[in-house]
Image 1 (cartoon, rainbow, N blue to C red):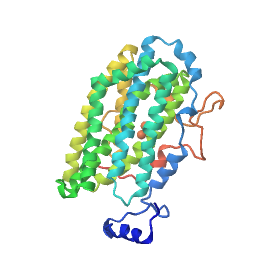
Image 2: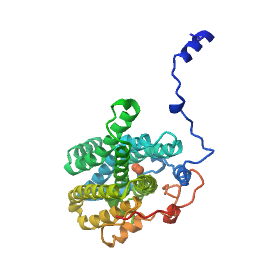
Image 3: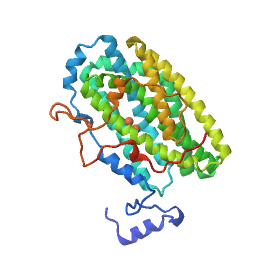
Image 4: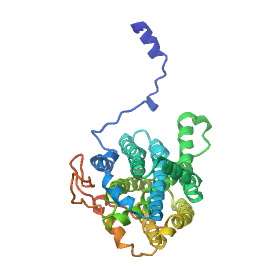
Length: 366
Ligand SMILES: [Fe+2]
Ligand SMILES: [Fe+2]
């Protein structure tokens, strides 16, 4: 029924307008900061779809792999699926919601990343499963993930941080009279969730990436390897971006508080590392690669710490050159009709290198 002028006036009059908490729009004419729009451009320029990569030619290779190898390969992708699922379902959305309303551009960048995690990354792993495995095998794989103690413990540790921030977000927004925490405590929880996010993106994913990269570096299972390369190219900028936001928050704390938080992070890291080690043994012992994978786990843990503004904690060790070869995300030369490498571009973009993300990054002393 059409609203007449009088009923419209009444409807508007019944709303309580408060200029202090008024809605504001995302104004892209200005900038939220010196780096968010760069990340916006990079994120959108490297957009891709799971169906961009055909997996058919890998099927011939897959069919002749030993069962132990197939099993290890599938378990890794399953672990990656679980991590990406929750990063998309709760991790990124919660971090986005925790950011103050006026930072609409930051929220937009994080929301974009959130959409990639499950809708593109997790979906891509499913596409690999659907190409190589039967429905029964896929169901068994997902059931394995639900009962594997180490994977579940990792999820509990990471998602636990997201849920704490989620609760605080909702309290602040919808139940402010019941808030029993200070702004400082909120920021601590927000920072811890960002640490969890960077650990997941820049560290925990990589034990799962190792095996596809190990094949890719030897010129095998190239299409699945392309998917992994596209995913890790995304995760690289996700970890950098959230790391930058985390550094900003960390620097707002007193030296004493920073020490307390640093201790918390080291303890959190050790708990995750223990689970990672055991999970690596389960997955990689049957294919004799556990030692190498643990080196790679420590290598990426150091990288995650650096993204968060800290010094590395593990000694430098040589990573298997085959995997580093597979990890090389420089644009690859390939036949467009047989495969779509990560050189594929929806829009005009340039290859990234580490220097693109040096924004006079302050070093935080531990
Ligand atoms: Fe992801
Ligand atoms: Fe990500």
